[in-house]
Structures are given as structure tokens and as C-alpha cells.
Image (cartoon, rainbow, N blue to C red; front, side):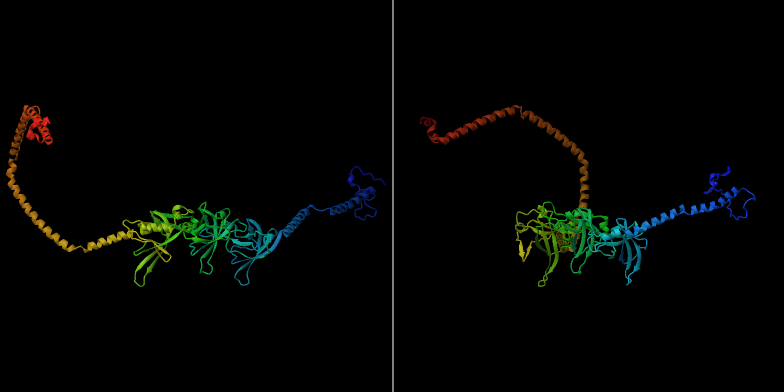
Length: 591
């Protein structure tokens, strides 16, 4: 049966079997079957219209709604995150600390170089209530580094005398720092005892650790700097007093490449605090750094170039000297010990004082002790001194002559040990080897193992002794008798002055007429002088150089000279021919 839609029907209104949606089937029991006697085609179209909504609903139920796309995506993301979490999740690690200050479960992170490696999941007290147990879920990436050498500590704000650290945790909160073991081949470990303080040296940091020993460490504390030529090259790791009977051992770390400057002959000294010295050169104030002033510090120096020395291996032990001067003195290899004795005060002289020769330091004082002879009761001060020729010749330079032989020769020439004042303000003294004037020659004595240099007083002692002697002499003067004599002398002088005053008065009264006639006497004297001048003028004219008298006198003197010459010739002739007095000149001539 072919069905052709009516003009008022669209093609979509036709059913698949060719009937109209408005047609009704013969079994249609609808209460409104259409008008009676209506068109059968209209019944078919009405029935098709009733079947179309059911078919469209069936089509819609077979499709997926777009609303389900978002939950599916969320489910996929959650599955991926869960898979990733399970894949990256590492083991559970237990850390024990003294306190849980700054730690919060579910928030506090475990970091290394600011990279998160885990998170705190639970915090509880230990069974004995003495410590806290922190359970940390680590990431799988940290698993290879969880060995026995790995260390953990809590990063908190720490303000100490020498450093200021962890300030960023005031804003971000505390966290646990992990210091991985450098060797990943170690035995795995999941239980650790956390450090209460950050370690001075991180695992794998290049450098070497050394030990310095001293009787006292002063203000040295962990974290104090280590200096080389005023450059911070390391830090103090800690101190160990041992059993308390020996020296204190201080562990220090020197970073690379500065650890290469530590030689087997290097010298370490305590650079803690402020050093103030008042000596012959004036007031000297020295401070290594502000940090060293607050927390102390250790400094070291290397041997001079050319001195045989090799690099010191790690864990080498060195003595720690009290200051730079002691460390420098220990660097001289040639040292000769001497002893001298004083029977007067040595105030201002102490161990470490300078020993000088012509104002140049040649050694140091090694000891100052008091000795009492119980048999005689005599008291004297023993002073030990170490003379180091290299202070003058230079380190590593050997002297051409044995120091003892040189000392013997100088003592024979009058060398003595004297105390001299280095600073009058502080009273500091030095031991000087000098040649006092008129010192008799002596020999360098050897008493047991001691080489004794003769001593002589000097410095303030001589001045004080001279003042004391002068005071004694002044005390012995008969001051009362001298005062009495002076009083008598003054009384006599007073009487003499009275008599002299009376004489002057009498003389003045007697000389008054004479003084009145002095103008006439002066005029007469002037007239007499004028006449004398005229007389001498006339004499010069009569007997002067150009006068007749002078010329006659010259001729007479000439004749006298001729006569004297004739007499001299006659005397010579008679001396040769004395017989002429008898025979005459003629007889002499005949011969």
C-alpha cells in the first residue's frame, strides 16, 4: 500500500510503515477516535503520532549524558594521583628528639637543600616520657640515602653569641633538615636519634678535621671560626675534656682548599676575645673579628717558605698556644736555655716576657720562681730564659758558632743579665743582656744542667736604690746642728750689716764736701790733661821720627854697630893667634 502524504503534512510526520502519525489503528480504543464517518487516513496518522514519543525516548535512553564527563575526569585524576602517591611513597622513619618544639603533625616537612623529602605524620612521647618520637613518611627518592650515617635535626631560630641562624622559620615554621650519608652502600636504617644542634660539618663537605690541645680553651665554643691570615677557613666542631686530668681536646674543621695550608709544623693559637698589650712599643690592641670576640676563635699560621714541612693529614694533633707570640716563639727550632738569679724584686717580669740584646728580642722568659735556702734563709728569684738565635738570623738559619761558646765569650767580656723597664706606665719589665760599664770579667757557670748567666741590678731598682742611699745620707746629716749654726751665722751677719750701715752713713757724711768739690777737681784734671798733650806733641816734634835728634841717634847707632863688629873680628883674631899680644901683628904676618 502506497501512502502519499497530504500537502499539510511534512515528510517527518509519516511513520516508517507509511501511515500518518494521526492515523489510528482498527483496534484503537481511544475515547476520541475521531469524527464519525471520518477519513480513514486521518486515523492512521493519529496512531502514528501516538507511537513517536515512545520511540524518541528509547533513542534518548541509549545515549551518554555530557554531565558525566566531569566526574569521569575527576576519577581519572584521583586514580593517577593515587598511583603516583603509591609509587613515590617511601618508608616510615622514626626520629627521636628531646622536644617537639616547632614540629606539627601533618605540616612539618623533612627537607634537604630546601627540597621536600618527607612529612611528619605522627608525634608521640616515648615509653619513658623522656623524649618524643616523630614518625615521618619519607619519599621513595630518599630511600637510598637512609643509611647509618644519615643525620636529622630540627631547624629552629637560633641566636647565639657567634651566629644567627634559622631566622626564616619565624615565618615559614620549623622543619627537619636531613643530611644524607655520602655513601649509599651502607646498611639501611629507619630509626634515628635526631641531633639537638646543627652539625658543624655536613656529610661530603670537602676539608679535613684536626685536633688542638690546650690546658684551657677560654671562650672557645662549638661553631667558633678558624682563621688563617684573618680569613675564616673553618670552624670549631666541639671540645672534649676526657677524664679531666689531661689537656682539653678541641676538634676543628678546615675547609678545602685551605686545609692544604695546614702543615706538620703549623702553629695554632687561641684568637679569642680582645688582646691588649702595653709594652715598649706602646699600647697594642688586637681583635680577630667580632665573632671571635663573642664566641672565641682559633688561628693558625704556616711555616715560612723554604722550611721543610709537609701537608698534615686529617686527625693530626697540634698544641694550642695562648697567643700569637707564644706560637711564633715555638716556631724557632734552635733554642738554648739559660738561668740567672736576682736577689731583688722582679716585679713586672713574668713568663713570656721578652729577652732583649741591644734592644732586639732574642728570646723569652720561660720561668720566674722564688727559691728559699732553708739553711741560710737567703731568698733569690730564679729566672729561666730561652735564647733563640733564629730571631736574629731568621728561621731555618743555623748559627756559625755554638750558642754556649758565644755566651761564654760574652760573659768574659762583661755581659750581664739586667732588668729593664719596658713601660713606665704599667711597670712591665724585660730581661736585657747588656754590658754594664766597669763590669769585671766572669765565667759562665754550669750548675747541674743549668748554664748560669751573672746578673746585675738595673732599671728602676738602680734608681730606687740610689734614691734610698740619698735618703739615708740625708737622714744622717746633723740638720739640727746645721740649723743652729745657720741661726748663729745669721745673727752675726745681722750685726755686721748694722755696723756696715753705720759706716756707710758716716762715710756719706764725710764724703759730702768732697763730692761738692768734684766739679772743680774734674775741670783742673781736664786742664792738666790738655797741657800734657801739648807737651807730648812738642816732644814728638823734637825727638820724633823726622827730628834731628832721631837722625843723629841713627848715625850713632850705626857707628856703635861698626865698632861692635870690629871688636868681634878682633876677638876672633886673638882667639886664633893669642901670641899676637906679645909679638904683635907683624910677627904673626911673617909666619
